[in-house]
Amino acid sequence: MSVESSIAAPGTSSNVTSRVTWEEKKVLTATLVGTTIEWYDFFVYAQAAGLAFVPLFFSPMTHNNPLLAQIISFATIGLSFLFRPLGAIISGHMGDRFGRRGVLVMTLILMGTATALIGLLPTYAQIGAWAPALLMFLRILQGFSAGGEWGGAALMSVEYAPVNRRSFFGSFPQIGTPLGMILATGVLWAMTAALGKQAMAEWGWRLPFLFSIVLIVIGAVIRRSVEESPVFRAMHQRRKESSAPLRELFRHHSGRIFRTALTFMANNAAGYILIAFIISYGLNTLKMPSDQLLLVSTLAAISWFAFMLLGGLMGDWIGRVRSFQIGYAIMAVWAIPMWFLIDSKCMALFFVGALGLTIGLGLSYGPQAALYAELFPAEIRYSGVSVSYALGAILGGAFAPAIAQWIIGTYGESWLVGLYIAVLSVISLIAVSTIKDPKGVDLNVHDHGAS
Image (cartoon, rainbow, N blue to C red; front, side, top):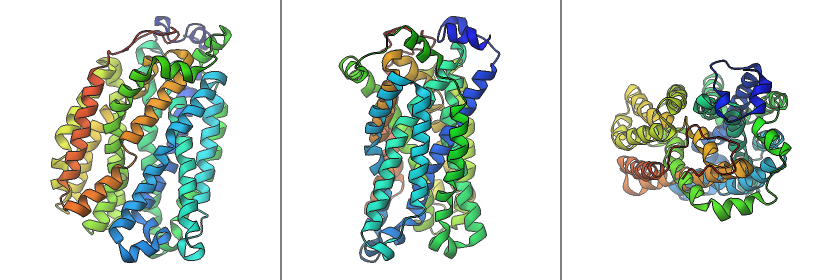
């Protein structure tokens, strides 16, 4: 299949092919590299919030109420989620009216700039209350950027895909999440091992944030080399882009947005437990070595990557909804037992506990881009997938680490964190089960009626 034929009839059955074109490879590379860099930026913050930020930016609370200081540090992670819908709405509107590619470059640059500036921030000891205030402002910019990033990357990959490989193509921006985590934890682990804990706590923590500048330049160049989405170009040529896509979105698709948000809720919450909370819990509560914990986290992210890719393939083999259902069933069953392995303080069992969680996470995240893209018509697709994703993140991961820290601090029982994740998994399982699998729909149809 040539690139021209793919553009002529994007999203239809004529796209069925086993051969990946050069342009499709460029798109997959651009979405993968871009989302990996975006999530590297996001995860460096999440990990630093658990390992370093409390004494640096919340030092008065550290002496008076250490538990509250750690909860607030984790809560700054959730603060950014509250601004994801704003980023999703603005980026989605621009992406539906003017195209996907330009918005993706913009969000990447904004995320990288905010991340690099965090690496230059003075601490509380230097400028007082301005330090946490500026930290929160830059975290808000990260959240705004992330709100628009995922939708555009998901659509670029799915709208370029052959109809029988949409879930697999859509898994590429998805696997940017564990790759970003691998890069973030790997950099933190390497720098901790090279500099030592004291130097890392004093100034070394800044280097992973500043490293983002290099990554952003690379990602922006790659993304600018990709052609606009063929579905958007076809829609633009037909001059059917909506004059008010947001109004159309909320007037006719509010129920769909709510259900798709619920399908993401448990995955996002469990993902942030894995990314941000488990390492902090092992370090601060179980008193386990930080370098070994970061290594375990990196290995768990590799497993997450593998099962996410499998989830993308399963979405094409057995359907998007079925892959979600299997993933959430595994998460619901594993969420509580994993904590008894983690509490053993044995690093090998700690790893097994985290590893089991990545199975359900991967299978319920791999097919998400294809599911979301196929549920919304082209005219409002960027807005629809971005807003659904952002709302799901607020319901799920926004304050999951802070809630987990509160549970541990209040009840002292880690398995209750597992109960919290299990309940969310059941809710998301029910939500995704109410969706009619849209596998194979025509992406150019005004509204294909997926429910």
